[in-house]
Length: 308
Image (cartoon, rainbow, N blue to C red):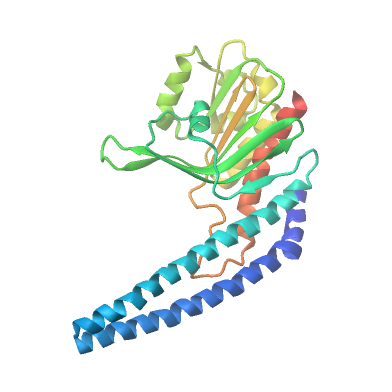
């Protein structure tokens, strides 16, 4: 709560002025779209009234050019909005204890191979799209995360169904640890039966009985390989933080620990920090949600780094 209060102060002093600047750009874009629409309607009415092929062909070039230009302006606004706001949020997170410098690349992402290497999802997934790549250090652990949209072909309708949409993180622990654990949301556990079955083929078993936190156990199903020290990896504070986050946000959360690798996936239906052209983006909630998602992921890494 204290950190969120500090972030709100940072938002008021630093992020809100940037949002105001972007809002002025958005309003200019709206005016351009409005007057361009009026002009296009006028040209179309003129073409219908004159019904001359030569006039239609002559006017088609400026019409097409105007449509392409408007599309370019909208894309430019969206491309500049997210990096500007994202870098300010990361600047605040950067000041956190025991965290190295964070870098952001808008058009990069976690790789397809890394996503499926986690074992949390099993699918051929012909559609795989990612963006908003963030990397850095927490203590001695390197990490990378990005927004992902992964879909596969439905066997029923032959349409693309969602496999995962949200933020996916991979972290690497420099010292080798023993054991492997995977955690899936309990309320939709049956949707991930293929991934669970693949893990049980490696001799993994359900270890819910080793989880002492009742709240965590009600939210997640936990599987592990034999001889894995579950509580040594899933500390009590981590269990409490994860259960509380899911309860407050209603999001799905997945996690896997495998030797030196940590994988965490947090569902998010909306595109993160995606600006709206037709209405105002002056909203604390717009940036708060992304901030809390990233903070949760980094807290997981911090907890693992501190306890190991």
